[in-house]
Image (tube, rainbow, N blue to C red; front, side, top):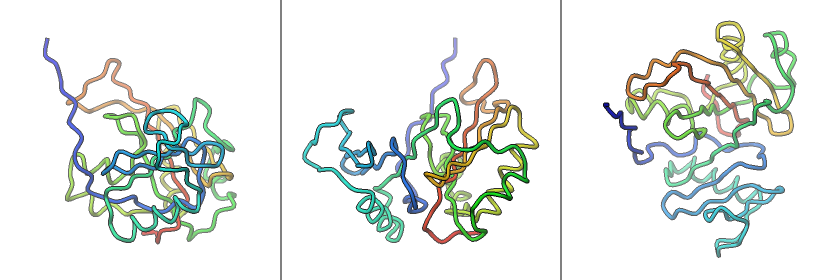
Length: 213
C-alpha cells in the first residue's frame, strides 16, 4: 500500500495579517521563536504552552497588551508572532444569516476591514488565507490582501450561501466575526480522503489594519 506523506511545516513567510479589534475566549497568541503560547481564558491571556493554566514565568496578558504586541508584529513584518482565532463548535456563534439581505442589514460599515482565516487541511487550525496559499505558491500569496472591506467579505459569503453545498453563515457581534462553513469535493490528490468530501471553514476577524479591496 502506498503511503501519502503530509507536507512538512514551512518557516513562516508572513506576519499576522491584522490586529483584531475584539478577542474571544479560546483565541491563541503564539511566539514561534520561543514556543510561548497564551490562550484567552475568562478575558485574560493565560500561559498555555504546557496545556494548563499555570503561570510558567511568562506572565498573564491583557487584551490591550496582546493587541499592542500583534500590532507591532504587523507594522514591522515580524513573522515570529501568530494569532490563531478559536474555531467554532458544531453550531456557529452568533446570528444565522440566510441571504444577501441578511448580510446587508448587519451593523457593519462598508469600510470596516476583516482578515480572513481558513481551516488548514494539514493542521486543522485556522490560518490566514495568504498563509494557506503560500504553502502551495508563495509568489502568488504576496498578491493576497491582508484584509478586505466588509462589502468584499459579504460578496464571498453570498457566494457560499448560493453556490456551496450545505452552507452555514453567521455573524457574532460580541467578537466582530463572520463565519462560513460548507462542504466541497476534495480535489487534493496529495492527501486523498474517503469519502472525497471536505468541510471548509472561513472566519472573518474584524481588524484594525488598513483593508485592501
